[in-house]
Image (cartoon, rainbow, N blue to C red):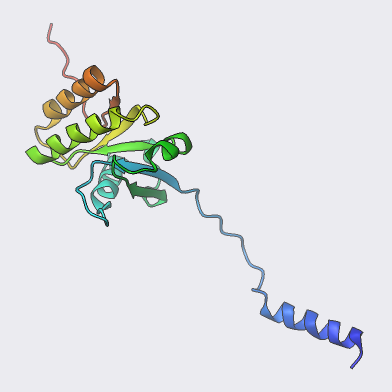
Length: 164
């Protein structure tokens, strides 16, 4: 068998192995949301954060876009990678659960975050639906700002207007 026959055979084989050309489906870019304050454990459950993103998107928060395009990553405030990730990632969140321990855990997380000079100083406050939690979330936001110089962004709550 000559080299040209062999080369032609290899080309035919490569063409047969290649996937058939079809429409190009571009997947939307994944938005990473590094989330602090989730209940501890090696496999922190990010489902509550995904549910919050879905809820906000359904409520008309257009910045969420397609909730499935988000990649939520649980991170412990004591992670040795915190500083490096803070320089690489721009979207950070603090999970605040709806019970007393959730608020204490969030406060401890903020306190730990304040000890890292290169840590993010602006986080989205993510929480389950709360009937009367706006006051507690507001208190946590104020404490973060006052004691730790950390800005917590609240979604879905507005300050009540003063009556004239």
